[in-house]
View 1 (spheres, rainbow, N blue to C red):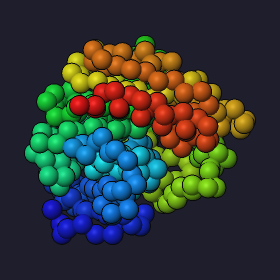
View 2 (view 1 turned 180 degrees about the vertical axis):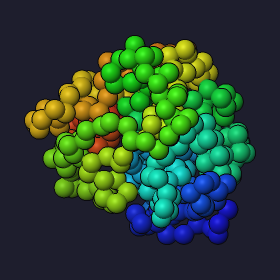
View 3 (view 1 turned 135 degrees about the vertical axis):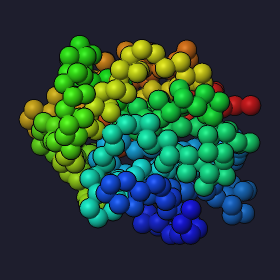
Amino acid sequence: MTGGWAPDVLGAPFEQRTLPLADDDEGAVVATLVRCLPPRSLRAFFTGGPRPFTDVDVLYVHGWSDYFFQTRLARFWAERGARFYALDLRKYGRSLRPGQTPGYIGDLADYDADIAAAMVAMGRAADGTGARRLVLVGHSTGGLTFSLWAARHRDAATAVVLNSPWLEFQLSASLRQAITPVLDIHSRRRPLDLWPQVDAGFYARAQSEVADPDDPVQVDPAWRPERSMPVHVGWMRAIVSGHAAVSKGLGIRVPVCVLLSARSVAPVRWDDELTRADSVLVVDDIARAALKLGSSVTIERIDGALHDVFLSRRDARADAYARLERWTTAMLSR
């Protein structure tokens, strides 16, 4: 570990810690762990009511072209007594260093090193086991990463919460199977070639349109650009390989909660409907793929939610948190 905990860009009570990883051909590689511990003041003790998750550690992982800034989600867990941690993976957000290819990874299993370092910094074993219960929370690509990790580390987590996890290719499983051989060959030869994509910035605009002035969210555009970061062939191959693994069934042993918007809208042009739907993934396909995660999967479809359900307009966001509380209370109660 490099040093101890230091103040984070989000301000108190958030702190961060740099986690050195093995160097690669772009130089020094790090991950960054952010934490928000439950309040300890006497006022919180006497007025906070019951805190059912005092023996729970939560670890959150962000999605593509993203980083951790979801202070509301951290408060949700900390106010219930949990220790909340969030991981900016290598080459994302706080962990991005000059000269690095933003977000690039050639194999999602390589993130095991990032997660292991986070677990140790949280006071757990590198494989995630520990005296305290562990809840994994992943958004989009982070949801895919954590699904695969939980399948490989079967004794680590107590529960898994997935916020619009990217579990299947947007253009169908059959197309995924068709392009996989091409991706395999291309990624071996030129992994950093660009993958075709069009992002007009409509998803970022939708989030701005539904922003809550009473509870603002601060986003650093250098770490979360309005139009997503360039996608590379080698990275896309890693994602498609993850989708293939999900389609075969992961056998996750612990309960899984999947939060999704009720519907998808293709972002071909700006329309107000984009503020009430997932414009990134095909949610019906994700719901079907989620059934392959394990034997205990709950799918919550939230009317009016965005791709990140916790960044939706106030009514949809409140519905998402209510469903999360209901599920976690049931699954984590002693």
